[in-house]
Amino acid sequence: QVQLVESGGGLVQAGGSLRLSCAASGRTFSELVMGWFRQAPGKEREFVAVCSESGSSTFYAASVKGRFTISRDNAKNTVYMHMNSLKPEDTAVYYCAVLGESGGSWADPNDYDFWGQGTQVTVSS
Image (tube, rainbow, N blue to C red; front, side, top):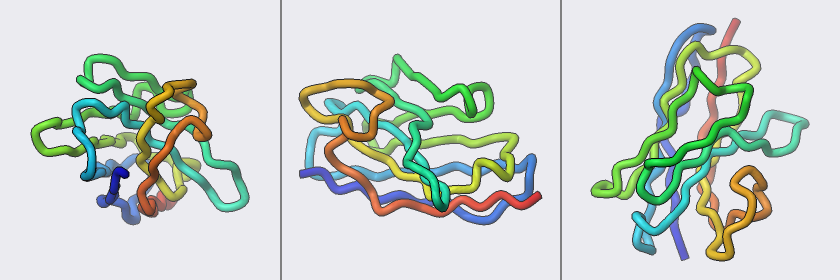
């Protein structure tokens, strides 16, 4: 079992920035592939970014590439998402998640085994 706790969400104006954090416990963090997803009202959960175990490999959804940066601190068991140039369409509940041991697609939420409770990000125009 892995417990995940997100924080850092809030209300920000368009063009602003936020940093989300996700603290993990229960397993060796440096062995976990960590992803961020988001879900807007009435929409399906969508992939945002993923980070390999060491942090050396990252991958982003086209909609956030160049604006968002995923990073991790394995000494602190925490993964981050730095969000810049925020847009109203970035408004959603953001979730961190752990990729399942069997691997699979980094962008498919069905391949992730553990999820945080989510943190709300609201971007006003």
